[in-house]
Amino acid sequence: MARNTIPYAIAVAGIVFVGCSLINGAPAPPPSRRREVVVSGRRVKTVDVHAHCVVPEAMALAGRNPESQDAGDAAARLLLSNLADRLATMNAQGIDIEALSINPYWYGFQRDLAAEVIRTQNEKLADFCGQHSDRFVAFATVALQHPELAAEQLEVGVKKYGLRGVSLGASVEGQELADPRFHPFWKKAEELDILVFIHPQGRAELANRLKGKGGLNSVIGNPLDTTIALSHLIFEGTLDRFPGLKICAAHGGGYLPSYAGRSDAQVRAFRGGRESLLKRPSEYLRQLYYDSIVFTSEGLRHLAAETGPGQIMLGTDTPYPWTDMGVDHILDAPGFTDEERIAMLSGTACRLLGINQAGIATD
Image (cartoon, rainbow, N blue to C red; front, side, top):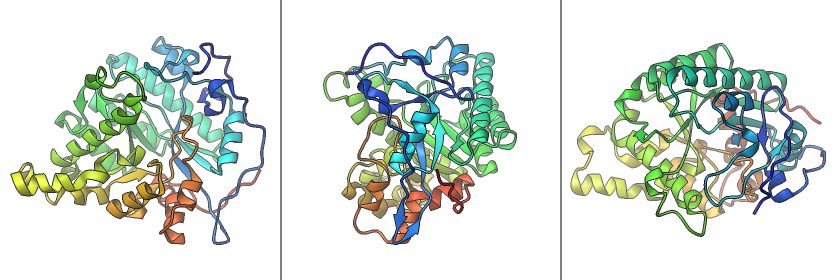
C-alpha cells in the first residue's frame, strides 16, 4: 500500500502527471536514453493511446486537490511526477508519443462550472502539447452531460486548440452513451472525423458486490463498464445511425471481443435486437478500435482474430502499473506479421490521430 501523504508535484504548463514510477515511494526513474523500438531492422515510432494526466487548475475550479487523489476504494494512492519523470518513464518503455486523456470527474457539474472546467482543461492540454509536440498529443475533454455544449466544446477543441480527438467516460451519470440525447454529440464527432476514446468508470450499481479483496472494481467493474457501453452502442443503433464514428475502447474493449458470439446467438435464437441492426452484432467489432491492454499474448491474438490487427493500438494505461503492458506485449506476441506489429505500435494511431509516422526525434 502506498503512503498516505503525497509530495508536492511540479506542474508543467498546467499539466500534472500521475506517476506510476513513484507508487509505493519508489524513486523516479533516472534520466535515460530513449529505448528505440525496432521491427526487422526498421526503427518504428511508437504511440501510446492510453495515458492519463490531470489539469490542477481545472480540478481547483471544482474544489478538488490533485495532490490527494483517491481511487475511492482499496487501491493505493497514486503519487504525482513531473515532466522529467514522465519522459524518463516513456524513454524506458520505448514510448515515443503519448496521447493524453483525462478521466471525467465533471459529469455531475452544472453547465457554467462544466464549461469553465472544460475550457481550462482543453486550453492547458493544447498549451502543453504545443510545447512538447514531439512527445505528446491530447484528447479533448467535453461536458457530455450537456450534449449540445459538448458538441460545441469538441469543435472548439479540435479546430481551435488542435486536440486530436476526444475522451469520454463509458456512461454519464447513469445514462448510456447510446441514449438519443447524446446524438448531437455523436453527430459532431462523426462530422469532425476524429477518434473517440472511451474509458470505463466502473459500475456504481455494482459497487457493493465488487467490495472486498482482489480489486474487483478494476478487475471486473472496469471491463464490464466498457462491455455494456459498446453493447448499447451496437444494439441501440448508434453505430448504424453514425457509421463514420471512429471509437477506441480502452482495455481491449472489455469482455465484448471475447464473448461477441453470444450476442450473435441471442439475435439468432431470440430475435432480440435483430430488427434494429444492419448486420450481426459481432460484425460491428471490426469497425471499432481497441487498445492493446489484454495482458497475455493469447489475449492479444484473440482480440486480433475477432477485430483485425489493424483495429488495435498500443496502450499502457500509464500511470497504472501494468508493467507487462507496452511495446514488448506487441513485439513478443507470436503469430503477427511485421506490418501488423507496426500497425499496432503506431501505424493505426498515427493515421487516426494525425501524427507523422516518420521523423523520430532522438534524445
